[in-house]
Length: 314
Image 1 (cartoon, helix red, strand yellow):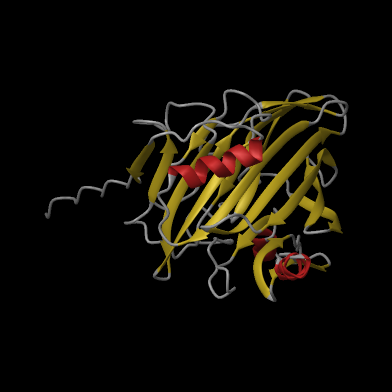
Image 2: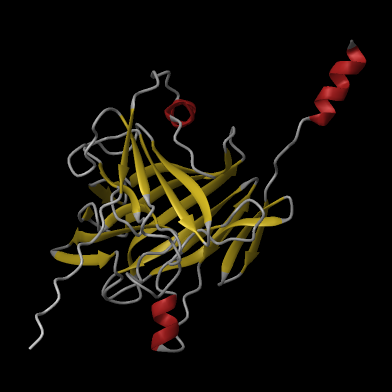
């Protein structure tokens, strides 16, 4: 019996992630030799084009075998939508308003990366009217191999402080918060959203524990769920309805040097079409330390833009 137990212990996988930092360019996260995530953190001011491509950090996500990029970078429709990203379009500070969603008039700049075990922390300056920051952030990412059907878990813990005074972190559900943006190659005809509860309207509901999205890229279907930790600010909106797949959580709150604005989310990624309320709820319960029952499931097709009416021929 003792020999059997010893064998089973050796057979258990460790699921360690390799963290590789390419200074001032990216942080690669590999599992089993395959890159499954990559934080893009360059801030290249050499040309206006390069600056536009690198004015904020964001995380790319890849398929389990590393062959397919699931997320969008710079360019294409809504260039500011990039992978997993965090921003706010209306930040009030010292009588001024700053847009650090579209990155108008200032950048988010990674100044240091501290690698850890299956994790790393990016230190980020949120620039004000000059290159000097008015906000500083510690954004920690932790990587896990979750229970099936998911192959990757990405947890983000963010703490945003002011350099001085107080900041009002604000915006709206479409232009603020923690977001996930699928690749520019997403099939907009098939994007589908899932919510906990019956007949959920993402335009109206607040403080959902989770929301999920099914999308197709390069002929492959994936499911991603965002878990909203109960310690996050209350009255959080969920933006999950666009056909191009940008979705996430929009919290509001205050930040100061003494009292940071803290956020905690986790994204779980699965290959294939997953419509399993139990899998989503069990994952949230584990993340939140709760034992909530499995809810019913609202499944909604994305809202597609209506075609513009054609002008009558002259």
